[in-house]
Image 1 (tube, helix red, strand yellow):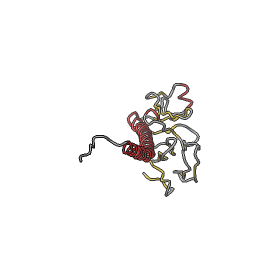
Image 2: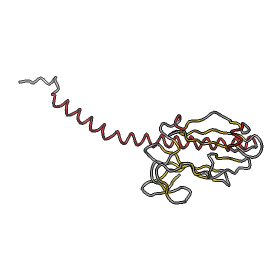
Image 3: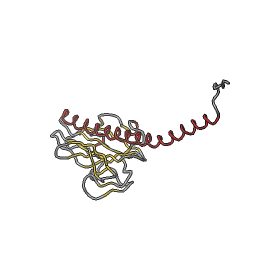
Length: 195
């Protein structure tokens, strides 16, 4: 007696659907975490690139060039300015129109969605002065919002903290004597910063 196997049992369909949904539910946090990580890396690398651009412009123009960083709500902007009167780039001269912009305003989250200047978790200060809590000031460059590069190769020094709301914490270290820029990622397990 031959049986007809052309149909699929409802039980088989339900089992396959349940298995597919369970696998998708397990994969979603992994994929989401990976996307947050990659976006944060892209955002930090983009901002580090703006700092490197300012450094190169300073050498090319034989004048001080600064990146002005600004937090507008939860978003961050960066804009390059060149010294117009030989006294370095200062906010007063930017306001007067003496130090002119070299480019338009760059919104960090236009290059990496949800990424901004922020501290999203408790981290050790990359500059070595204790720990920083979520919501702390992400600009650790003194009392200014300018990172200035001189034509002699030096710069202002400090740390810029970059992160999405979730995911890894990144830091951009600027070394004043050399004008060098390094991007670091915080390892929450070891509580250390790594390139």
